[in-house]
Length: 393
Image (tube, rainbow, N blue to C red; front, side, top):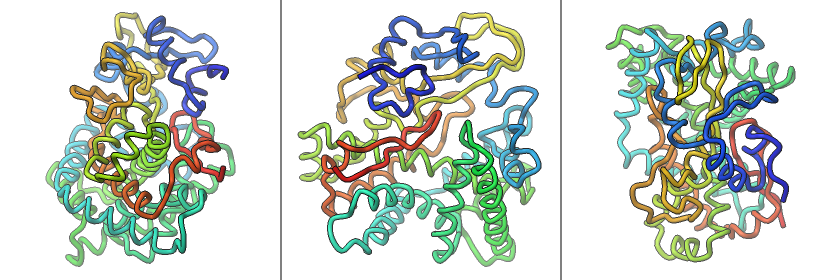
């Protein structure tokens, strides 16, 4: 198998990990003149960049991607704490973190299992490959959207909108994706404003209501900020959790003893999913941009420099995890960069693991044989996400 042509293409390569291992060993932080950016692969470099006060999630002169300006997508994007730094970011991020902390783990597990069963109810036999792909994309949206207060009858169209928004926000999206994303943003904004209006009228107590209360406590009682970050929960959960479900099926197909253990004892599934998050993460890379000249990871950087941060490579760095290529759900002292680090570390990781665990449990209960699909699976086109698309063998 030929290695990926570059670290961006690696995200959807059938097996990018030997290539990542070579980069970690020989080029833990280097300049790629063809891509026109720095690339960080080693655990030390990745951690230094994600924790650096010089590094931002957006270019200093372009807080919102230029192609989004003038659309409803920009309205959402400019309010997302995930895409902001500085004075406005800190209080809003506190509100988001505090809101996620209100979620009881048992409540999420029950809600995830309930929706997993509901989505599987229409299968009259063992699900087809297309059913599994659809299930993996719908489950995280159904769980998070319902927790946010979206009515059950709106969940199918909300799922479609979130998919269109994800395509629009992905690097390299074209005009058709932008048009679909703009329409999706309009629909999501209207839906979430209705949910927020109900909360303000005292009619609902849900995750969006908790976010609204948290925003008020930090002086950010702006409906657009609240609604946008509710939508942001969905967008971030969608690709990451769908990929985590799919990549766990791939791992189960590849490891007979692990698969047998999971079937015999479903209590092993959370540890299996957690190891997949390290071993084959759904979000392979992220980007950072220097806000000023200065040293980053022992190199001199300059304002505006872009850095591709390969989270999946850092997870396979022997300096971070012993015998990193080995898939070991019982691994102790696991270091996982898939959820980031520093001020932009994702606080929703445990939620993604819980939803994915419920999804895998339901798929196994429904008779899914992972090896049946994975021999012919591909990956959704993406510059940073690794989301399997299953096909019949």
